[in-house]
Length: 220
Image (cartoon, rainbow, N blue to C red; front, side, top):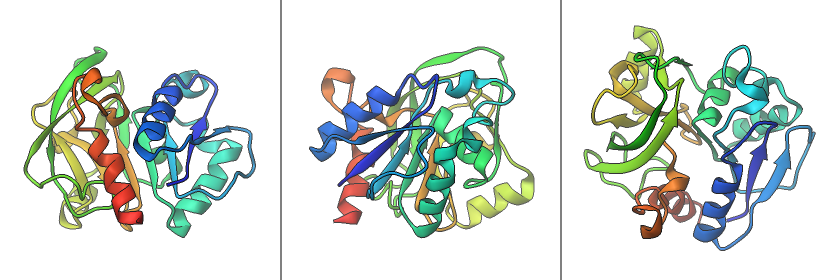
């Protein structure tokens, strides 16, 4: 699987993502700078966590309007799988590729620890290696992970199976404990937890690895 990692000024998890993708896929991903108007054809695009553009204004708002995102949006709409983690999730909501918004944690404190997630959907491109209803452990590290959408949107997400993961406990105030959502086509996933930080026992477990393997299995 040929992949790309989008790199913004201020990104600090792009290397983590690159290492994870190389270990799982066996191929180094292409690192794509935010000013690139185009990049090679790839099977998978990752938007990493971090503080893109310093997270001024709203988290992810400036990066959502960067040059490279015009191409990412175009490819996502064409069906290329796109994963946004933490700040990458915020960028995806700011572009409109995913519904909702990420607000300041209800506690107003930064949360950094391993958390349990419930797998809400095991049929998607990104989650087919998991079992619905099972719990997995993935780290979080964020200050603005409080997922918000209006009731109509939340009901639609639930009804269409677009909720991928929920927190097993309330860690940040996210509505309906939502930790990750899919777009309607199922080829875009945004999630606050970091699967790239849990891909092998040396990192504390391999629950995150399953997500990347799920994409590989589905793409063939």
